[in-house]
Length: 326
Image 1 (cartoon, rainbow, N blue to C red):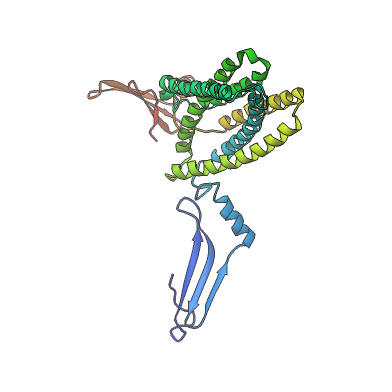
Image 2: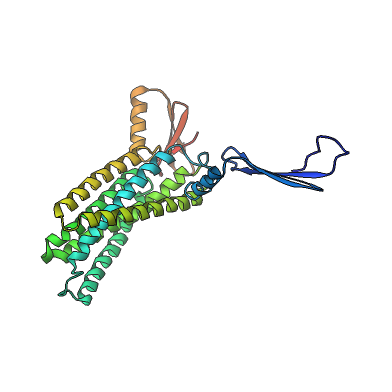
């Protein structure tokens, strides 16, 4: 920006350029000042070098304008979600090791075509299961994001358990492999769909794409860390079945707890049938509002307006999800 020199017109012409960091959704902070004149060029940066490096690294994992560009429940949810993902990737190394041993990796009697066919059936079952699950439950994932988030991770735990059990039942190996793949196919569909709904919830500055991209960076970091820790744990517990099971079950319990805490930290602003029922029950018991029903002559539907503690919700007979008006 241009500014008059403090010593008046007699001074040589000069220009000052300031660099600010932030966005419209967060407070701006000055990061650098560049001053140029006829005979000199000076620059000044604010903050320490390590602080600037840390800020740039943090920018790869959090949305622009953080924390003002996301809802308050973003940080606790992402913290618990990252921890549960970390435990998942650690356990994945144990279950994959068991599964590869079950199909004959490392044994001279095993054939390449046999292992390939078993893996093909496993993947095929998972693909078909994902299609069927989407067909029957795809339209319910948005309105019940919390429930399906828990269901997805429970099915993932079940799939990993199947893989870990596969060496114990060689005669039923294909059946166990297919059941495990089927469980994980439900996880992929439900987790991806509910994640999209939660991303829209977190976005306060129309930055859903940015939040989704940064969530991918966070998951990649958790994946790499989990794979490294999983390899170390698999090496330590190799040949000790009791240690493998103890580690797997302990991590599974922590995984379920972290998922519960992640879902519990969410404060969704939309209503589904269950939350609307709780709201109406509260309205009925406390009588802190009024209701007015009117007939819509164009749509021929009944709309109910409920006022509760300065919030108005509409409930239409043609809509399964009541909406917050103001």
